[in-house]
Length: 276
Image 1 (tube, rainbow, N blue to C red):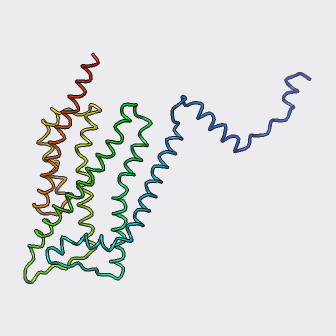
Image 2 (cartoon, rainbow, N blue to C red):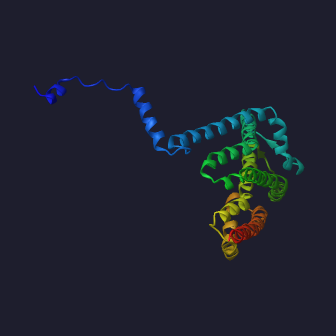
Image 3 (cartoon, rainbow, N blue to C red):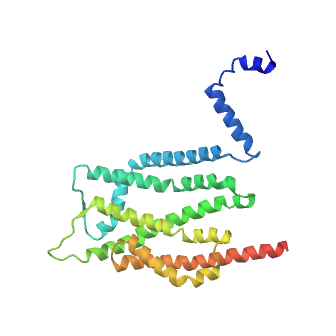
């Protein structure tokens, strides 16, 4: 009998346990990644942690806001109270559900800084050292702009829109405003303005990446105006006043974004000349 035949007669080695095989695959994946860099599994785990922590923070904040949902509800209907109107609920659980929605939305607004921080922390490993230094200013700026947009919508826009819309009533056509549609109206406007006020920050980041230039923004102002008017018509009630009150500030933000882009480009050119 030859050596090859003897080797064929030997029993095959037992298969590796499942845990051992998984460990071997994990070791291969980790060995494939360069030292100091995150693997694909690490990125997926970080994304999972980001989403989970953001959701938990929003739920905890909503639970805390529930205990002050009654004062928040009174604050919500202040524009209607100032106009001499009352708000009604039309179902046994509508008031409870509205307070629950108020707690959830306010909880989400409260944890916006934490969510933005977790998002920036997730993308931070892909940034250079110089780019990481601007994370905190970006979090502060984005949070401030979001809250400024919400405050503008609630303090300036909503009271004027409410008075304007109620003026269409007559002696035989009296308003009977339900709390659920009113809450949807207010929350939609506040969220829309909070997002729209992030425009200067978005232009700033695009300018840093070199994707937009000030001259392009100035040349596109007509197209930007048309887009702003269309978006304002979609996000606001179907009346001219609310659309103008949204389109006007957004156009001012767009022009301010041009100045921000100019400052970024000028600073990049100055830094390049210093290096030369």
